[in-house]
Length: 281
Ligand SMILES: *Cc1c(COP(=O)(O)O)cnc(C)c1O
Image (cartoon, rainbow, N blue to C red):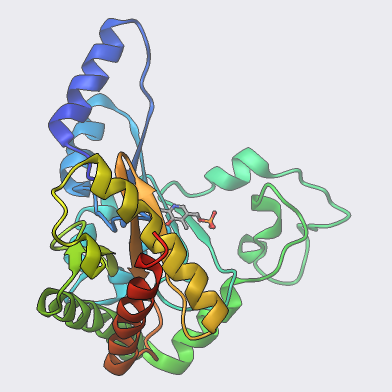
């Protein structure tokens, strides 16, 4: 699920030969399903060479920036022209809190400013460059970043870092538990972010040969287990198909109040309800 920089360059060259003008590359720092990090440094080399704007979508995975242990995942991000980052995802800021960060000073003001002097007076008694209202496409919006500022003040750099490190520790714990238990199969063995994608294969399906018959049945397991979870009111987990793969569970670890025993409980529930579901499938 990651961009291959050499293929990117080939596509750019091919587009130019066709007379097109490639101008924008969107790399992702933590994809929504697999949690994959594109190799930003290498992609930045390609963009620099071809004079193309590099945007990095770090909506999900940008939280690693606050961890000296995990920020290597977004190595090269300082070379991006623009970055999106949702502190309401990995960092657990209350919904919603989304940022767009640009390297080019004043660009948003140049694009969006309407200079409505009945709203954004220029002759106030303070430095008006701190006013953000006139830089945005919208006008009236929450000051959502205030929640993040408050959290940062309360937890400190060290608190944010330990939040992120803990999420990755819990990911490691869950991967180890999945490997140790019967009936769980990984979609990706070593996810880069804290997304863990896996199937639960009920006992009755474990002897089936891989192929369309098994996939057909496996595809029904995750939605049925989730339905049973909702009825039981015990826990919940997301799932989805991907490409031609049958529905799989996707655990997203983003809450650092979670414990190892929560993870054990989740896997116990998937196993218990998976067996119940398999009798109907
Ligand atoms: C969640 C997510 C988005 C969407 O962010 P919004 O602020 O909800 O629009 C974009 N990109 C990725 C990779 C995401 O995971």
